Amino acid sequence: MITEIFAKEKFKEDEQWIVKNLLLETQMGSYAYGCQTENSDVDLVGIVMDRHQCLFPQQYGFILGFDNIPTFNNVEYKGESNRIILDNRKTCEGVWHSLTNFFSLVENGSPSLTEVLFARRNMVLYGHKIGFMLRDNRKMFLSMKMFHSFKGYAFMQLKRIRNHVKEWNEKKTCDNNNRREYFEKFGYDVKQAYHCLRLIDLIDQLIKIGDLDLMRDKEECKAMRNGEWGNWEKFENYVSQKLIELETYVNTNPVAIPLRAPHEPLHELLTNLIEEYYGSEGEMKKQKTEYITAKSVMSKLEEINSKIDKIPVTAPYGVKPKPFWFMPH
Image (cartoon, rainbow, N blue to C red; front, side):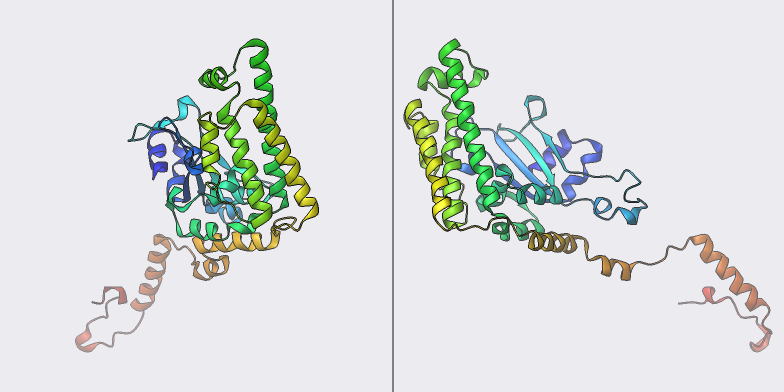
C-alpha cells in the first residue's frame, strides 16, 4: 500500500499507527474520473479506524469534560515538499481521515469525500474488511444535502473560472503558471472546467438514479480537458443552464434520494464497524481480568507455604511434603 511509503518517508512518529489502522486506501483525482494524462499526479485518500483511546477515553483514565482527550481527525501531506515519488516516477500526495471524522463529513454532504466511497473498485488500492463493509453501505449517505453541496461546489468552480477569465482578458496574467497555457490556447482553464462538467453529471445521477458513477461522463470530460469541447462562452452558458435545469427538476419531480441522510442507521453502521474491529464493549468487559503483579503472586505462595509448614508430618518415612508449586507437572 502507498500509505506505507508515506509512513517511511513522511509520517511523524506519532502518525505511524495509521498504517496498522488503515481501512481503505483509494486513488482519487483524475484517475478516479477516468481523465488522467501521462503527467497526472496520484491523489490518495485513506480512511483510518480511530485509535481505541480516542473512542473509549474513560478506559485510559481520561475524564470527559475535564481532561484533554487525545483525538485524531485527519492528516494530509500535500504540496511540493510533502509529496512522495512512486516507483513509476509519479508524484503522489495524500490525506487520511479517521472513520468518525469521515462519517461526519460525508453525512453533511462533503463532495470530495463522498466520491471516495463511489470510486470504482479498481481504484481501491487497499481495503480492510471494515473498509469494504463501509463501501457496501455507501448509498446510505446520499441525500438532498449532498445535492446542495455538489451544486454549490459546481457553482463556485464556475465563478472561479469566470474570475480567472476576466483577469486574463484584462491583464493577461494567471495565478497558476502551470495553467497559463490553457488560457493562451483556449481562453479559459479547461482543467477546472472539466470538474464543472463531471459535477453536473454527478448531480444528475444523484437526483435521478440515487447512485454515483464517477466515470460515467469521462468522455465529455476528456474532450474538455483536451480543449475539444468548445469555447468559454459555450461552456459558461451550458453550465449556467444545466444548473437551472437541475434545480427545476428537483422542484417538479420526485427525486431518488431522501431529504437528509438517516442519522440513526448511520450511527448504527458506525457502531457496528467499530465493534467489528475492536469487539463490543460488553465482550471486552467480560474478558477483562484483574492485573496481578508477580510480587503479589509470590507473597501469596509464601503465605500458603508458611501454613503448610505448620501441618503435622503425615507422609511415610517422616518425609515432609514439598510445597505444591514444586510438585512435578
